[in-house]
Image (cartoon, rainbow, N blue to C red):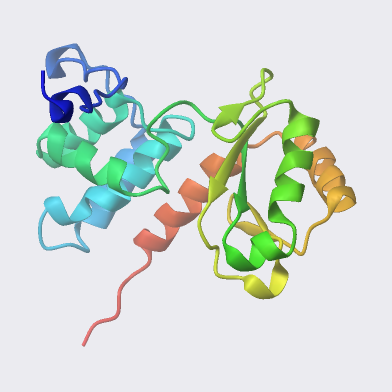
Length: 205
């Protein structure tokens, strides 16, 4: 066997169910929103991104294969096409279910120089998880991310559609207490906010 063949990595992601076995989960509200958003685009293929945001909201903050298959069915696109879009963008959670709150730690240069990894170590210790993991109670998921484009607030965290920074250990502890008391999923809220933006009428001219 060649070295090239040995280096091949197979995905652990589950296969998509057959379309005939799929249980459609989009709510009436989601279907109506998708229909409205479709009027903003020249064809259904162009609507994959906003449809995936609807799916991420409807499926509790992530995109299992069933969610992507539902999008492909509703837009009449292939599963491979929809999955290709979903897995290209880091804003979609495709690898595993996420917690009620996803804490994203920026570790790019400015945040790194201002103590991002020290902050990340504190978060890992407090939550008992590493990057890419979710707490046993399902409340928090911790991710390392690329530049969040707010270097003036380094070191910076993002939760949902909110930036928090500059942060230190004490501020992190206060934020964790606040988030534990927040019962609504900030992951789902973010998806809903993006859907609302897509529903806004576009400029004409």
